[in-house]
Length: 353
Image (cartoon, rainbow, N blue to C red; front, side, top):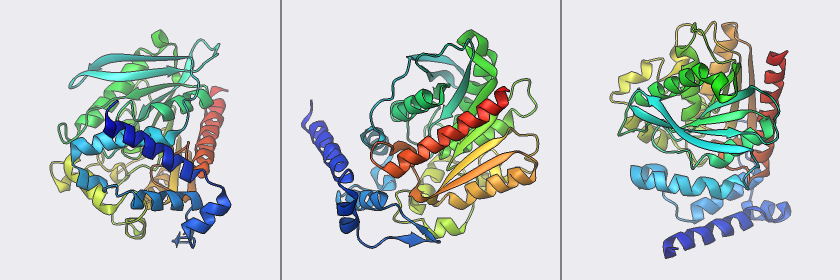
């Protein structure tokens, strides 16, 4: 093992030990509670952000694309916890619009169902970073706790592949899954399109793009999605610094993803700007209280509801952007993920009746 990698592992263990200190110690070390827009940051999350700041970790936009990808893939598993037990994991490739497209299929352990409900999961990372490896532990968790199969998509990333490459891959993956569902042991009537952050954006747009086709998602499961890349919302101002994802990071991602800032007006980039949201699948939308993307996630939930789409929106008001990758270190993130899976199971059970 290289010395640098060994040092990273030691740092990860030290961070986990620090985050798992008794809450009384954390309360003393973290200092006065931080409250923004009437939302008080979870104490352990506050302590985590302080540890991160003291570590000298550079902001994402200062790392450069290659290093940002490496850092993200190393950072995610450190905080994601132990691997949840699943029955099977299969990597394969499918035909995509830009060539072979890698997908990873997770099946739950002990399932006796002939056809499984399935989550098509699109990872976060600003359309620039993120990978199947970075999201392996969250996907295992979603599979094990939901009883669903999970299909994760390794869509093309910017800046090598700018908009609409990631979206084209996501739409192709859904259509492939719908067409091959029974051969894969998947219930074609219970395919959920899901994702977090940039992946949540892609999931929302996939639902819009396949509206009216023979097979459509039964549900949208959107976790702190970016729904308007040109927005200037109050949460982008109040939570745009100091809560992991910053306004500068978002501008960096957007500049790498798009050829022209004017593309933010395209509903395939900003699903909130779609003129008509009627006829879309029911939606579960989860947002974080101390997240620059909070307001646009809420706005998308409100517009769906106004359009007649059954929508459940829940805000985890003490959490920050990215909590899906923090289950192993932050109890509040673990509780939020448990609640999200409970919501998913409830909706799928209702649809199955």
